[in-house]
Length: 287
Length: 91
Ligand code: SF4
Ligand code: SF4
Ligand code: SF4
Image (spheres, each protein chain N blue to C red):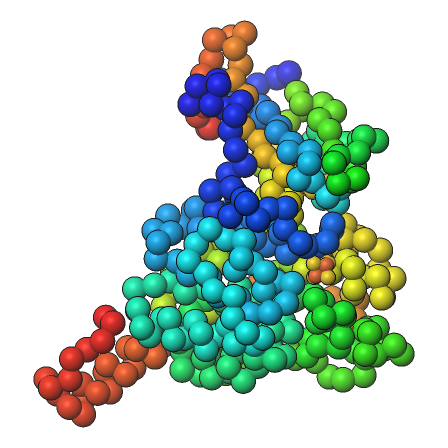
């Protein structure tokens, strides 16, 4: 690299983004952009052919990711990112399919799709940005809102029990489960790398500040306050029992890699089973 | 500064795309060497971008680059011309 090149050097993330769409719509202090940078970094480090990577998002603030990444991508309807990703993976098993969406989209509206894709051990990677509410539609209570937190549909605080995403994922059958906060930059990158390389269903939950709705309604300050707060409250416990990972309002956050196990993927199980039944008549698919 | 053997700290050069910044201050807060500071100046969108206060202190850790949610800041390795060194390789 000559000196001139360096002066004109571009942000390394630009290679992975549709720069004509940047600046993005996310609020100042929103953490989603940071998670995207960690994802770009993981793509760079894992050296996979970008032509083989597909990003699918649903609706929501995080759902916009599909529109910003310079990869084959699809912005699906609300909650339907996982079934779309499943279709892609089965139609072209060589693809590395990533679902990048929010908690409201994946676990609220599309919760059923999540459990079934995990149950079948579909070989996809799910990156779920958890900001504890339905942000794009105005801060309503989501399946992840902690008890006591204020939301636009819970002006006196939320009283519904919430999902613990790693517990749900493990129970449904996921083979890789990790949780970090957006500020665990390098660890998020490493987990995404591991998940991309993992055959099977992977979930990476990233707890991320939503400054405009969650922080404002709960008077938690700005993005920086929340980013710092989540990080300070987090305790790394790799392999922790997923039954202990509930999140309470402004309480301790257990983070780490909880599950990393081997299990036949959907296609592998299908090929094994059908070969056992039909013998040589069966032509294996996608392996 | 005292160096161990021939190992010298790498110096970084910080590049800020001011007009892309939304003034969240993540980079300023988390730079381990306090290289950056928020400025009083406005960018085209009316946000206050950071400025490089002490570039010599930058150790090319790239944390600002990784944390920025706007893809607005990045660092390159600074060439130490006065000593005629390449400065490209990291130990
Ligand atoms: S509403 Fe919340 S999650 Fe959505 S862009 Fe703004 S800060 Fe981010
Ligand atoms: S590379 Fe590291 S030391 Fe240099 S400005 Fe960025 S955060 Fe600070
Ligand atoms: S992290 Fe990025 S957007 Fe935030 S103040 Fe720094 S340069 Fe601006």
